Length: 333
Image 1 (cartoon, helix red, strand yellow):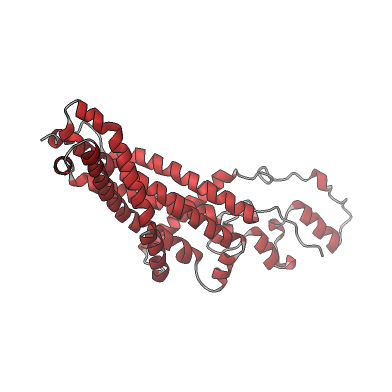
Image 2 (tube, helix red, strand yellow):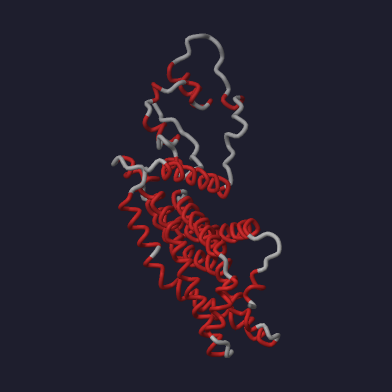
């Protein structure tokens, strides 16, 4: 008897995210036709079964064209929609496994080294030049207005609250997020995730959770280092080019900064790290279409991660810094 033909399942990552790792195609391949209930078969298959088994009564054969299909049988959800839903499901699975202690420690340490020490150089170099470019833009204007004693406070506040976490996350999204999406996408199209399941390893525990934890732990440290390097490079440029002493810059920064400024930067970087890891992993495990699909998923993962970073930055800034502030008043001495 002919095998049952089923529509292609639109969710490429269903075998990765499903608890039982069974897609409709796998179910149709694993369950013999004689064990399937008639309610699980399509109308066309039911007609074919009736013809093959024989008609015992004298009633006329049903017309296959007169059988109406279900309302949404031919509807496939848009790709961005089910990818976003898969990212939410993946985030929930990672949170549940992290809270229950189901963490692959060796893989987590490997990913932590990959995200942290191996990304330090490019992050610090970027932070240094961003700090110096930001210094050039406004130091001469402040000096002309006689506000040179508040330059260090403005630099410290800008770097701690916005520039350091955002710049670090953007660099991490381009370097780490693209690598995560490409690696998991290649594993998905080559069915290596199914091999992990056969070997008894849960793909979320082994592949996704270590990456999310590594990003959440490494990005706050990178943000703090970028803040220090950015402030030092800005103070050096202000002293060498505009004649503002480094001592004045550092004293003004010390007066302006509050502990909450550093804490908010750490919280932002953790949220940004989780966004990068979850989006990149979700886009990777929903890859299909071979090498072309891997490239498209990698590009899309970086773009969506950057958009998510900027949206989260606005939401957290609005939540953390409401009302009028008085930090610059203390920075002026």
